[in-house]
Structure formats: C-alpha cells, structure tokens
Length: 261
Image 1 (tube, one colour):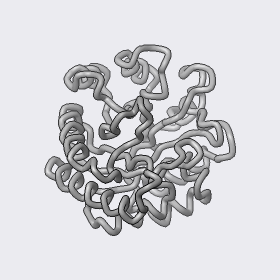
Image 2 (cartoon, helix red, strand yellow):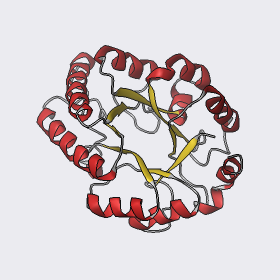
Image 3 (tube, helix red, strand yellow):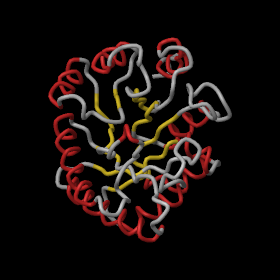
C-alpha cells in the first residue's frame, strides 16, 4: 500500500495547527506534510512529531511574502540573496524535524521579465540550494502547479519540471508530482508518471476538479494507488486536499486502504 501523509495545512483545520499532529496520528497516518513551519519553533514541532510517532515528509522553503500574494521566489531576479537565506532557514527546520525533502516554490512570473531570464535565475538558485541541501542528504523538489489555482506561476507542466531536473543534473533534485495539478494541466497521469518515474521524488493527491478527497471527481484514484503499489513506489503520497465536510468525516477512502495492509 502507498504510504499516505496528511497535509496539515489543509487537513484537520478543525483544530489549531499544533494539535493536528495528534489528530493525524489518531486517524492512522504515519507521515505528515505542510506548507510552512516558520510560525512555530522547530523544536516544538519536532516534539509533536516524536510524541505521536510521525515522520515529517515534506515542507516548503519560505515563499516570500505569502500574505501579500507571493508564491515563492526561486525564479525571481533580484531576490537571490533572500533565496539563499531561505535555504538556510529551511535547512535548520529540516534538520530539526528529520525531514528528508523540501520544496522550493518558483514564484509568479513578472510580466516585464523574459521567461529566459526567469529560467536562468531559477536554475542558478536551484543549483545552489541542491548543493547546500546535499551536504545534509536532503532532497530538493520542484512542483509544476496548474494555472487555474495559481495564475502566473512559473512552472506548470510535468515535462517542464523534468527538463529542468535533467538540465541541473544534481542527484538530489526531483519533481514533486501532484496528480491534481497534473490532471488539470497534462492529463494522462499514469503514463506521465511512468515516463518520469525516476525523477519523481514525492506524489500528492486531491480530487479533480474541486480539490476535495480523492474519492470524488474525474480521477480514478483507487486504480492509481494499485498501479503505484504494483510498480513498487516507495515514497510518500501527500494528501493535499480540502475536506468537503470535516476531515474525519471524509476519511472513508483512507480507511479502505488502511485495511489492505
């Protein structure tokens, strides 16, 4: 069975953030992920992980000014020093939390900057981050995100993400393949995964089109889970979805898969 990680930024929002670790563990999750840890002390989060026997599997580098609408800075010219500082901040948290991978958000593409310039900045920043993180055996992920949920985001398609990974040629850089974003932008999820499997470092899921539980919408997730299992996928599947009517009420799909262990 694939290993499922609860995304604590979207799930268990019925309780404050620091109480969501207990909720995830009580529901049978063994791993967790979230967008950002930086509003809390690393040691406090680490204590919750240890208390509940959870693995931290993923979080994002600082994204710039999120509240002002920024969605990452890795591809933004003039923000290189800030990006390097963000790598150090994320590294501190990753080491404290025992987290083996982090995601660097590219950012929204400024209209007055060429795509070539943005790509050059992106590659250079990613190369720096990859080499710094490699010193601590931590993977760096990049994620293609759909243009409907995040208009203007620099990286949108799986092929683009894997081309960047190939060009960087850094062994600890992988693509974060969110099946929700992939279905919206590219479709053909399973063939796309098979074509790029060696470059996929993490998978995320949500129902399409409304980003609810993976038991609704146009994607046949039970079939995809079976294929991942048969294919020998050893990574984590992050549950980055918005519960329809309460997190616990929507975990029937997860109970089915837990019973198959």
